[in-house]
Length: 214
Image (cartoon, rainbow, N blue to C red):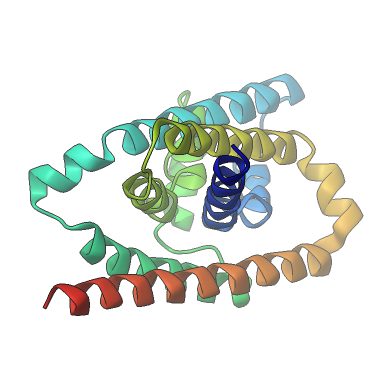
């Protein structure tokens, strides 16, 4: 029983330490605030809640059907580990430079979407909250699930990360004022460094497995 708890705790830490930097709530909060600048307070709250909900559903779907996607395209977990590690490393590098990846949204897209009624779904839910990196993370973590408990831990981690996103979005103005631009960049850089370490480990695991099969 104790071993099971320790195993689940280790997997939970892996899920959180992978998904949180990839979603990067502190990094995307200023973008969210700029996107919703013209909206009333109630509308901004609604957008934050719906956006986080869409992000949750999206990641859970990819986590649920990760193995099916692998099988359909004939992708091995090892290949996805190597590719995912490269994507994670790039995301972490962007975070070290205090940037949000260009795979999220462009300035032109932001201007176009600000007047849209479905801003909560896109671009806030997808791809701002749930970008390619987060989706890749959910797929990769689903490939590491070895039991029902593991999968439950992954789902719980996704929900927890999205609740954190929702909380940070709702308190975006206060959090930005309290931490300041410099403080938020420092936190973002630390998260980026952690993500880069995880990325290197994923690549090492993938390459090691491929060599073992040769």
